[in-house]
Image 1 (cartoon, rainbow, N blue to C red):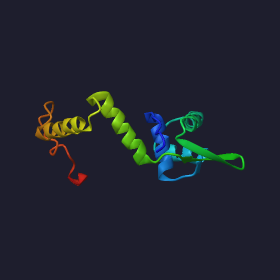
Image 2: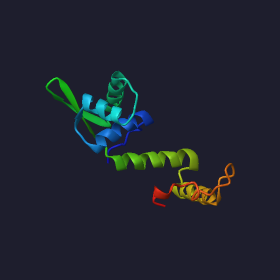
Image 3: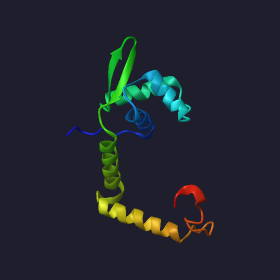
Image 4: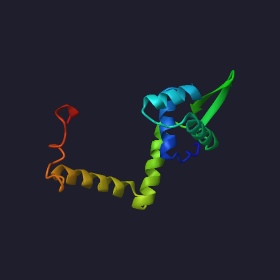
Length: 130
């Protein structure tokens, strides 16, 4: 199994564009990120692409004058690795303890927000599906 690189939050947004559809040119990635309301300068996005290539999260191929980028690692592998690192950092490596904590917080949220006095269900819009 390939070692999954650590992907910071900004670079994660670039990866999501490529997991959705790849390969893509830098210009296509820039346009997709702009459609997603990021306000990054194109040079910033190209820097993020270069970092991802150096981390071995992306590969590229030359297509005329453009480079076309594609993920080397899949999204599920990256999500699993990020969850594992999170559990190691905050819960001593125990996924069980992490899940228990998340479930307890969700139960507390269902009983109400102490600042508004509303339950989590009262705060939802009718069309939220819950």
